[in-house]
Amino acid sequence: MNTYGISAIYRFELARWFRTLVQSLLSPVISTSLYFVVFGAAIGSRMAEIEGVSYGAFIVPGLIMLSVLTESISNASFGIYMPRYSGTIYEVLSAPISAMEIVIGYVGAAATKSIMLGLVILATARLFVPFSIEHPLWMVSFLVLTSLTFSLFGFIIGLWASGWEKLQIVPIMIVTPLAFLGGSFYSIGMLPEFWQKVALFNPVVYLISGFRWSFYGVSDVAVGVSLGMTFFFLTLCLIVIWWIFKTGYRLKA
Amino acid sequence: MQSIISVQNLVKTYASGFQALKGVDLEIRRGEIFALLGPNGAGKTTLISIICGIVNATSGSVTADGHDIRKDFRAARSKIGLVPQELTSDAFESVWRTMKFSRGLFGKPPNPAHLEKVLKDLSLWDKKDSPILSLSGGMKRRVMIAKALSHEPQILFLDEPTAGVDVELRRDMWDMVRSLRDSGVTIILTTHYIEEAEEMADRIGVISKGEIILVEEKNTLMRKLGRKQLTLHLQAPLQQIPTQLANRQLELSADGAQLIYTFDAQADATGIASLLRQLNELGIDFKDLHTSESSLEEIFVSLVHQR
Ligand SMILES: Nc1ncnc2c1ncn2[C@@H]1O[C@H](COP(=O)(O)OP(=O)(O)OP(=O)(O)O)[C@@H](O)[C@H]1O
Ligand SMILES: [Mg+2]
Image (tube, rainbow over the protein chains, first blue to last red):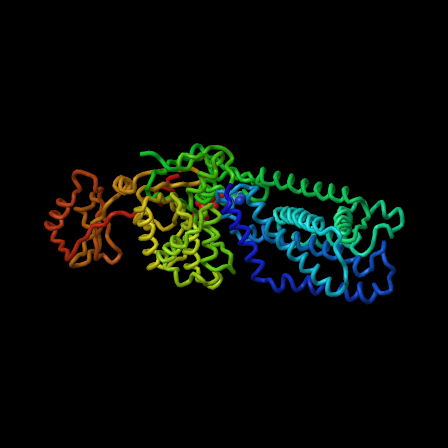
């Protein structure tokens, strides 16, 4: 096991992030604050409580997930796409480091950033609305699992993308809509019955539901199902990555 | 002598269907400087990329220091340093950080003293905190070399190391490569500057259209193919070569002031003595003379053209 190699990649990626720390953190913090001003304070004050939770507090877990999903994908995809694009990937490919170790380095760093970001947004949200976290341990577990899964997903996109546009397509066209429709701002239970069924095909529903449960003990789907689905996506991503490295797809001529 | 790199029947067909290597066999000896020459597109970079693990071979096998580059990739790769042909670097990183990254990537514990020595040897020490972005092209190439040396490799591949490097620096680089060799590192370099191979290499390989067409000790190669020329600077220019000399391998320079005699330096009778005697008899005086060996460049060009 090349632990020095893993830590070299991990630190390198975090260093890249720290160089632009202010932008990296400031923009999600500002946009979250805007959401709270608009949805939480302005609109939220006229909204009824949802399952005993005030609207402002209700959207906190969803907002965190929204940022964590998109940032995980963009961080991880950029992290591996950049060296592919600039050519510096040659060094990683020529190093005595296995595919799994490369993934641990890059994905670990991307997930770390997402987790930190999630916690920063959590703290920001606390400035706007009072809330408490019922199951802190589960909250952290869901945050970590989601960050990992979507960083893996981003890594796959970064390996697959053959241009900058493609790097943007999946986050903008698929993930953001799924996250918005996945119950960030409302409970699935508020939808008409037909759309509730449709919503169950949206993987993000399970993530947000589980995460919200860890805050308030209320959820759209059973927590066990949420957890199971999260692990399912995680495994799926791992299998895809394993296949990519096995075939050398897009990495080696 | 045991070879440190052994390439056997290596074939590479790119996805486009183009066959870049057509069954290459090559043995690199421990501790030598091996120069790989060949025209653009011959397959030099492809060969190096396969050995270093950047490109997958279609068939054939490679061992580095006895380790199969596929089955035993960790052991094989940790022995190898690579300076690729393309200048690629993380523009915003400092020289020092990028070196630390390279060393770590190759599984070596931190060793600032070693990195310092490498940077000093490459005259980069004063740039260690500069972002790579701010360096000149020649400096960037040296950073690439520094990165490759950061993990103390036994085998160093230099793919056109002196492209875009000024003359003085090229000399320095040659000195550096020699001192690396003296410290026990095996060096394989590709170059388009034949004088570089002539100056540095112990052995020379020529690759053309995906096939190795020659591997030879440099000295043997020079001797075997070497022809010498004798140039006579005449007192008075000649209009043409006198008929009495027509049966000799003589040429007259355009201005008629130099007479050039080509001969085989290996032959028992070079014919120089009799030529000089004959010139004397014909009353052709010369004020100076010198001999020169044909360069590797000429040898190389004639080899590739024969194909
Ligand atoms: N990824 C690739 N896909 C398809 N063909 C390729 C690829 N890389 C290289 N080739 C082809 O393989 C041949 C050998 O290329 P290679 O880069 O090994 O040559 P080279 O000897 O290093 O040339 P140069 O002196 O110009 O660097 C060329 O014809 C090139 O076009
Ligand atoms: Mg090349």
